[in-house]
Image 1 (cartoon, rainbow, N blue to C red):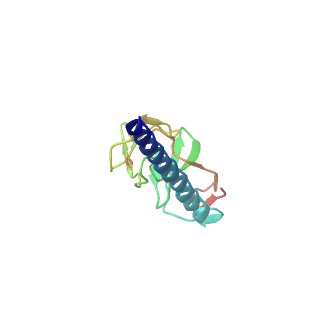
Image 2 (cartoon, rainbow, N blue to C red; image 1 turned 135 degrees about the vertical axis):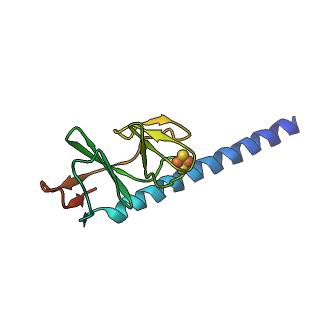
Image 3 (cartoon, rainbow, N blue to C red; image 1 turned 90 degrees about the vertical axis):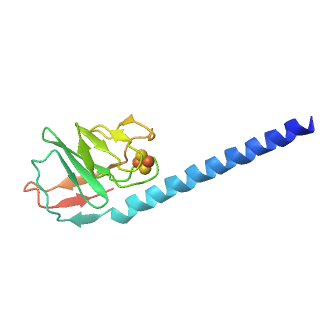
Length: 130
Ligand code: FES
């Protein structure tokens, strides 16, 4: 009986550690988004390119429809900087995302965080709004 109680206690401790890790991980990624929010970037940017990688974000041009995503993988936060076979590929553990930020291959299971942004008509400036 005592063994069962100890085992249940260890399971509770493990579950608590996982919940704490997820909480702090979510906080860290939120801080990252806050740090780039309301900033204007004038990166070298070709608005006709399908995908352009920047320091903290990725701009996807899906047939003229733009979307901006955090460049941090939702698995452990590595910066995604590869585009292969129409997929955004994380260099760390191989997670793959489609052009809408949805995970296609794990270990990441959450979509990339979408960032609100405005791209100027000439494509010279990206305004991160949230
Ligand atoms: Fe991207 Fe692990 S950090 S797959």
